[in-house]
Length: 542
Image 1 (cartoon, helix red, strand yellow):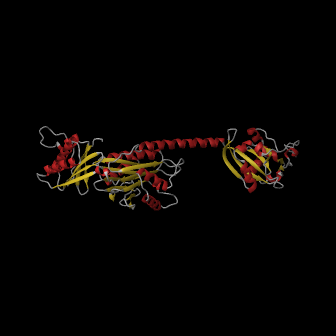
Image 2 (cartoon, rainbow, N blue to C red):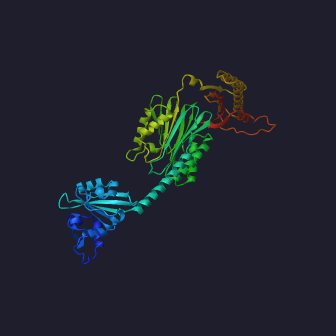
């Protein structure tokens, strides 16, 4: 092989290295070759008076020169020999350079020889335990049989180890954030009487820092259920921690049984206090089986999708306000129908947002997938995630909450009953309410003890409404497969509170009696300026 010709084709960095290392050649070695030409099979040549093989020996990188289609070894420099030991010239690379064969470089040598273009293989760990970056450069010979490849192996062990330590640190931090995120999400969803729910959360792929997506299901009592989904902007442990604080606050505010927009108003102020530089989107919705609607408020979040029993999908776009933490905005509530047979989906942007696609297109694709999705909430949830192309290496967190209001027929329908009575006021209202409750509870075949407790609770709630409320007044009895719910509504918005009555007091004991005998009780303001006071009794297990 003509060393003068291939030296001219060395990459610029190698030519400069050779120039920097050029030194005067001792008289006794001038014109000589470190390896006899007969042994190497090629004539020795010089680069600016310095034998080419001596140039290669002085290059700090590991160098191996192979020639011909079978890649026979022509030369290895001193650095290569120090790393892997001496090599016999003229031997095929697969035998002479087994470390390259193990790293899979022989096919790369074929590519370089065929294409005449250099190739690089970055940071591979060799048999000596060190990591190298291999650059394979074609060199020119007298013909195809003399064409060769010059292999430069640069030791990058320190860089590789530093990069691996950094990756390990990032993996550890990400795992910490994922663990924190999952621990702050509900471990088991609450199970409402009237809804079937399922949820899924999938963190971003291994290269993405975990975000602040969350969801929750909160039973409010009186048969009502709150459903929440949100997304804290940003990533990492900080986003997960803010998410946990917001989720805890949502549960606390939900216990106040406030309208959805008032809950978001409280969250907005809290988010600004937690971190003024971090914002979050959120949807808070409440389902009341008596109304057959989902009342919601949105703080900059994506629209709820509702599929009715006929497969038509409704997109609840309005109303919506700015994200939490921005301040200066009064949120408002809207509603969408959610009757028997309907399915609703709440989700975060990781499910529908793609860099190469408009957000509305992603939401429209999700709506199409929902229109054909049937089965249990978990089945629907999984189908929506698959249809969106979410995989383990997805670049963003995904949270999905699916709820269904099942259409019950046959024996299951007998377990869910409603009865209501309008109260006109006057002295006959209380006796009439007691008689109505007694008849309904008897027809529902409740045990005697539960029947009597239900009639007593009805009497006390109606008496409280007659004394402190205003028309219109209404008594509603509802049974589910788990509980009996008694609710009285009126036109006054002053909420009752439980207090201890003094022995001489002639009133003030009604709510205390209800709280004592019932499994739970509560009150809330209703649209239009009134209130509802309710209590519930757990049914004996069958």
